[in-house]
Image (tube, rainbow, N blue to C red; front, side, top):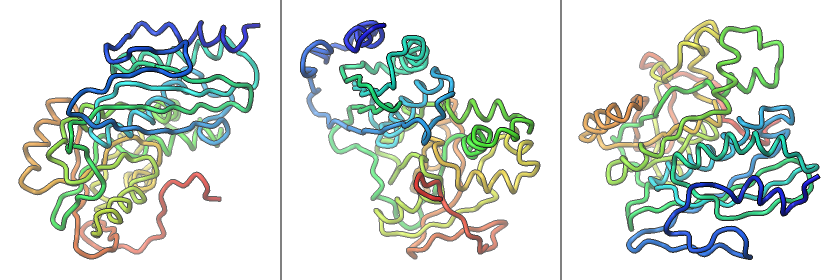
Length: 322
């Protein structure tokens, strides 16, 4: 059975991608990196824990993709260009088959984003993966949560709600009999990258966040940081046809879209005069953008359907909610 150092060498030290700004990668106590002039470095760390973010029985390839996709999403939300990633992985026992399949999900996504694995650690313990990603942003051009202003439009990328439905399928096996259950489960694990969108939004979006806790929760992070309110139109939330057929009606699907966590789409605000040009540029990238609301002066969150204020008890995704 391979030990720690053999596993590192066999599965994590042979990435073909080699960046010019990595002077020294794995093999010493630290990596040595070169920072480009005129850029800020965006850094984000996230953990995925078996039993919380994925089941022990989950496809390791999907887990590898999800682990990196969730971290890349943080870079996208800041408008950063991916550069480096480090990994700490804990395994109950050395498992070469699991690691091989994990890498089959991890490295294609890393390579597609010119993201080099620069080091990390493997230990014995409960199954978990912690990644730290680094990206570059031109000085002063980072997308923040704090710039939204009254009158700005609220937009989201892609379609929402599929991840929540996929999680239901994972946790409630009887729902595997529902329409498109397998497709929605795959979408829960395999989010699309929005790096190109985030970089395109530099100098345009007044605020931005990735949808990791649910739109209804994440828009409130923008509200808090920007000291504004927001109005969301539930009937405008973009949902897939698969989700509608899974839920049996569009209104229920849009409720999923409101609270669905781990979507890793972008929610951002935009001055009215930039709306048309940004939508056109996103279309050229093959990315769907949908206007779902606007920023208001009040510090409240208003939910509307068919232009009518509704009163419903809605909550975003919360890891600690019981």
